[in-house]
Amino acid sequence: MPKKTPQPASFETALGELEQIVNSLESGDLPLEEALNEFERGIQLARQGQQQLQQAEQRVQILLSSEPEAPLSPFNQDEA
Image 1 (spheres, helix red, strand yellow):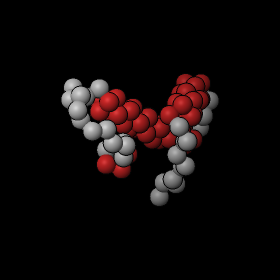
Image 2 (image 1 turned 90 degrees about the vertical axis):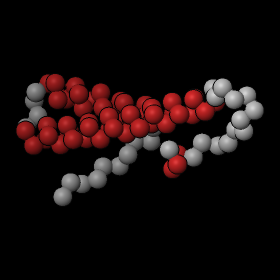
Image 3 (image 1 turned 90 degrees about the horizontal axis):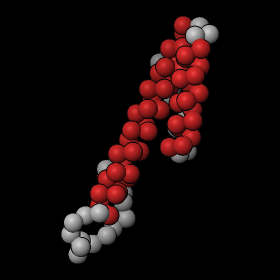
Image 4 (image 1 turned 180 degrees about the vertical axis):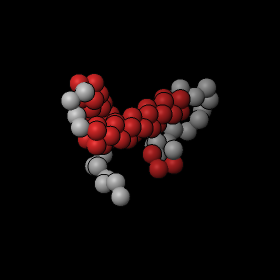
């Protein structure tokens, strides 16, 4: 059963960790099992980053809505 790794606090933190993983994998010095674990973590981080970018894009689209009289309401991440 794969262990759950804690999620980074921010997009920037996740991106930094992902860059470290890519550098580590590109070096070719990791044993196979460790490389697979790093790759798996990298995929998780990439998916998390993609989700955060999609949420940011939704927020921008809401703010730039063509309806000037549209009521603004707080963005609820759980509803996205």
